[in-house]
Amino acid sequence: MLAGCSPAPLAPTQLESGEPTATSAAQGAGTPTVAQQPTIVPIPTCPSPTATNCIPTTPEGVSAGFDWSHGTCEGSGPGGLTASPMNPSEVAFILPLGTMVGGHVTPIDHQYYVPILFQSAPDTYEVYSAIDGFIVSVGVEHELVNPPDKITVVIEFSCTFWVWYNLLTSLTPDLAAQALPGPGKSSAVRIPVTAGQLIGYIGGRTLDFSVVNSEVTLAGFIVPEHYAAESWKIHIVDPFDYFDEPLRSQLLALDVRTAEPRGGRIDYDIDGRLIGNWFVEGTNGYAGLSFGQAQDGRPYSYTHLAIVPDAIDPTTYTISIGSLLPNESNQFGILGNAPNPAQVTVETGLVEYELVQMNWVDGSGQFWDRLTFATGLRRSDGSQVMGTVLMQLLDNRRLQVDVFMGKRASQVTGFTIEALVYER
Image (cartoon, rainbow, N blue to C red; front, top):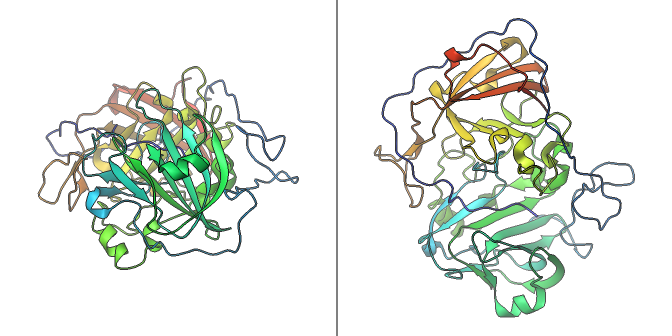
């Protein structure tokens, strides 16, 4: 299922003083150093339709996508969302699609409904079905660090339209008796629900919320096959587009993003340009080292890289570097916010980005604590350089990257044997 997390790692940090200055973009000369690749344990192809921890395929070898309804669905087409997943009066704010934090190296495929009191007890807030349909899947992720366990619920409207929830702390007693599996397991069920029906509770974390419409395929993933391990990703849509009025306007008032699309975006690839998602060459795209598992202490997203607009303030860019996981901060702003990744091509040659801490301020210029609602949010990054990254497009779909934490661009002379080659 979709990997969920609370945005708690976005803890408030001290806003640094000083205005950013422009970073350099050196033109490359000579042949880049051959990159030394990590030891990779790729995810295998599924030997059968019911196998797990593998990439599903058809007999022709093409990704079979997904069937959250396990063959029991009827009809097609989207449905209107007529109820809020949480009581709007209990929601502090909504974080859009495309946020990146920690192990979520590429833009996140769900929104976060952040409760009024973030540090609340489990089961503090009620969670409701947003649509008439059927609960078709319930999963439990065992949580040792931050109990209780995380519960995932998928609600089907049709064979092409699903609503997805994660991080619930419990289900209602009736639903738990019918559908709740043991820790680390999932259950295939078919339980009718109506819009506005109480399905469970959360507390001490956000509610993850996503809408999947398989009749829509995102254009900003130029190699959709890279997402076979999470095949719904290429069908993620803006939830706000499906809420009925006046509920849509009520929820939009809680959205901290003012740019269109209001619900956020996750697909930014432009063929032949630096902008977008990248994966270490030969690691099965999003599947990474070994999908859903750690290898030598590294998560699967160790092989991910993203250079994309900020989810809240898309006039600024974020560099998200999986190879710094699991022990480093790995999302950064760009000093000077240049050169524009959407304009970097093979002909540009070598570019140097100096990495800085990301900060947001509200419309009055006050530092945003990331726990309460604020209006007019924009990025106002720090000026202290935390490191430098070198990037060079080798061809339209291959990129060489080397990261130098703790160094300014003036201290970096070129690629080393630690450089990695990414693809898409």
